[in-house]
Image 1 (cartoon, one colour):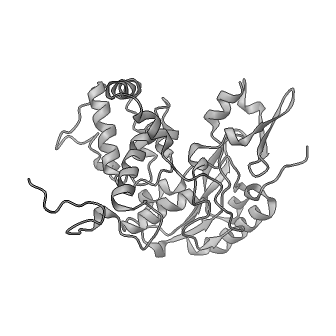
Image 2 (cartoon, rainbow, N blue to C red):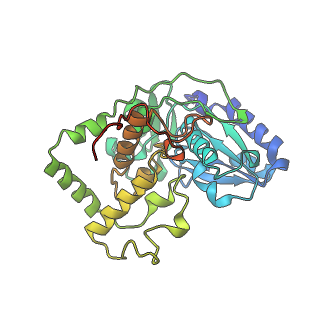
Image 3 (cartoon, rainbow, N blue to C red):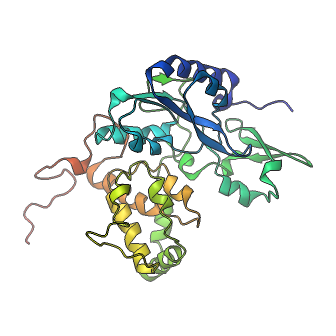
Length: 333
């Protein structure tokens, strides 16, 4: 079958990426990139240490992981990292908070047309054996082509893109040392927070019941925490701390809910909505909704979006006598 190549998976682009990484290998300890996973529908993070590893590199719509998640735990090294536009926002935020030194990071940026949400793919079609399916397609051409034992099947990619891609305004990396491929225009719609509006149409009791159902399914595996690129205090997390003793090890609804609320609060003004928390959740809990609620408030009150500008000062990193959008002078206390 003829390949339906897009800008994201074109052979020339991969060849350029490999050449750029090869030129930087003498200057870094290793490079974090994407390789083929356990089947053609999955990509997996790989480390490139020598030129022999270059052949493992790929970049296509299956490269969903945010590789910036690994950076904080690798401080002290000089690294290279492959990023999409949304991933680069996490790097900007890490640099803003001085959680990584810019001189110790070589960024290989690739403009991205969107990534496939495999959860949506599983709902769309019943795949008896993922290993029998070969991913081949083009997000730009509006379809995903699957090769099945019984023949080919084409699916419209619009219904398979991750939710974050549908509202993405930063398909091009916001910070990079090597930009691989031409920049592209944003294809996502402006974020109107329609998902939050739908939830807020419910009554207070209905919303409370919704979150009770969701949190009741939580198994406290902390995958959401571990997958977050900005959740950097994992070694002293309130979920594990015994001095002070914030949470018990009990799997009660109250303990689960307290952890998730505190997690969201700790990311106020910091979450770049990469979606790794929700994607990594084995129970499919829409936990990103909590972070998006916080982000909407920060945007309305402080006109700030995390990870968009290196020059911007996060609102919780500064102090003003009176904020432009918060008029509290003259209030009686």
